[in-house]
Structure formats: C-alpha cells, structure tokens
Image (cartoon, rainbow, N blue to C red; front, side, top):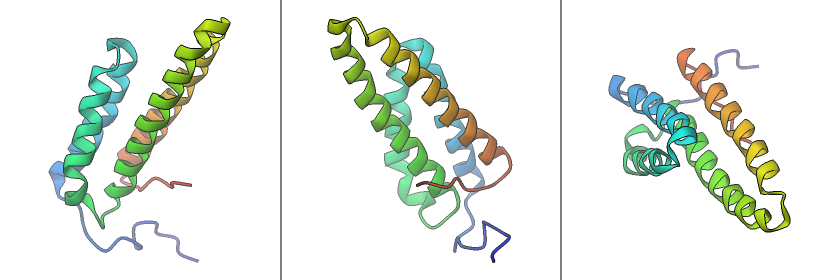
Length: 119
C-alpha cells in the first residue's frame, strides 16, 4: 500500500503554480459574492496553465477546480430554470453549499501540499 500520495506524480510543481491554484480557489470563493465573473477568470487560469502543472500533484487541483466550475455552471442554469417553478432558490442554496465544500476541501488539501482525489 502506498502511504505517500505524492509518489504517484512524476514531476515537482513550480512554486508559482501552487500560488495559481490558491488564486483560483480565491476567485471561486469571490464568485459566490461577486456574481460569477471571477469564476470565469479562474476557469481561464485553469485552462491556460493546465499544461504547466501536468504530471504534478497540482494537476489534480486544476481538474477539481475545472469540474467544480462546469458543474456549478450547469446547476446554476438548472436553478435559473427552476425559478419558474419556485424552486430556484432551493437549487441555488444547495449549489452554494456544494461549491463552498469543494473550495474548502481543495484549499485544505492544497495547504497540506496534497493532491485531491477526483472520482
């Protein structure tokens, strides 16, 4: 059994790449209170810098953030449609809780210098 989750990654990340991952977590968090523009900026950072973290443990965080962005966008649109049925507020509340969970979980794993498991 492998006790060190970092052993499965072949490359060591550059110090600035770790800062980029935290920046995207911050941008995602700000997106909850700024209307989402910072979410788009964070996703752009993920896609533009994905090649620089490929093969490092930070790639798992980038993929986690990208997945969070796309699922949040999908469920935001579903919530918008559900406003017609008076259920949009409930959908957006659940979405907000899920997004906060993913930001906090990812940021905690990052602060411990650990990859995040993506299932």
